[in-house]
Length: 252
Ligand code: NAD
Image (cartoon, rainbow, N blue to C red):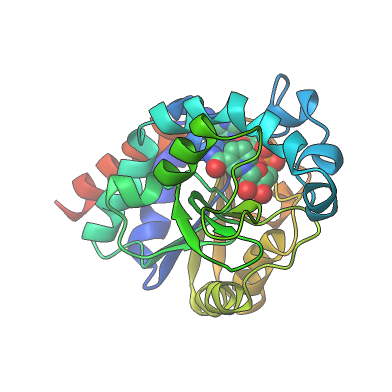
């Protein structure tokens, strides 16, 4: 492992444009379960029933039933050493942007300056009728006084959280910017991603196609490991701080 940490630090120091792509795995050590590991969210909630746009439009109550279980976990989660390691890399000029699949806002809370949220955010929502914006705190208050589904205070429209549901297109502006950053990067750090959700999973290919290198950080091997120049196995919250430490030691 020490050899991998050292190689990883060398690759980061060699690179001029580094971006990170993060998935649910980076927040597991903050107490937020990922989707596909045993015991993860989707082993208990079928995504087609609970988090697809079609089922939300048909029966928003079902989504909010899952949200009631997940909300306290999201609210109490704090950034972990992996989130802070990316902030340290940014300060060293070695992380230009964080492209994330996560909706938990932990990169921003840790202090990363440029975070592109491919799958939206849980920190706000909108009325499906009049588009009025609500913060998560406001949605919570409405939910407490209201029925099982939070409704807009102006026209009683259903409030939909600003997360991208399965079957919903990604924000083209955010995706375009992420694709540009991925294409221009000469190194992408892919952290806690199963790379099973598209189009996010194609971003490392953009980096690769333009001659950039890829380092995967994951607790397990994935079917996409052959794409990577280096695979660092271990918990992101343990491995990434060691990588940052090695970078600092190498620059002296
Ligand atoms: P995923 O659940 O499909 O995969 C997570 C990956 O992280 C797995 O490969 C797993 O082996 C790895 N992992 C688990 N613990 C780790 C750790 N401590 N360190 C390093 N790696 C670890 O997640 P995904 O690829 O991000 O994609 C699925 C979808 O899940 C995304 O659309 C995302 O929006 C959503 N999601 C987000 C959150 C969140 O916001 N925190 C939580 C669950 C799911």
